[in-house]
Length: 123
Image: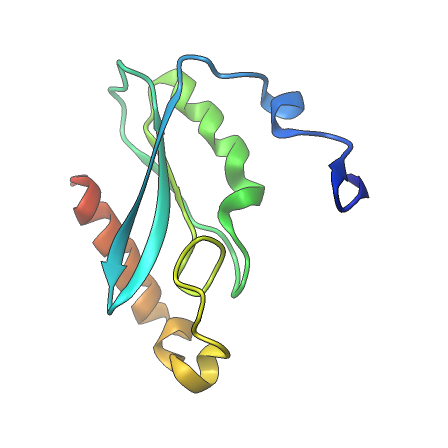
């Protein structure tokens, strides 16, 4: 909910509160030469099955599913990522239908997710 593009009326902290015990680790994983950015949220005692948030698209980012990180305070490691061509991930692909048509396939989306899960050591 934005009053103007520069000033949100509601922030993430307004929605879910501050999460002082949740730490965030940011990184990237390479998939077919493209860098996929991810953010991993967890507490020191995280012991439950991980939750991986997958944003919609094409061209969306993980920002609108950030409230999922609230689950980290309940012991679930939470991983959010920007799919290749979106947000903080490799974004110089132009129109994917011209330069990287595989980005628009289900097979690639599964490959990207699998690479992220393996990179993070989840089973």
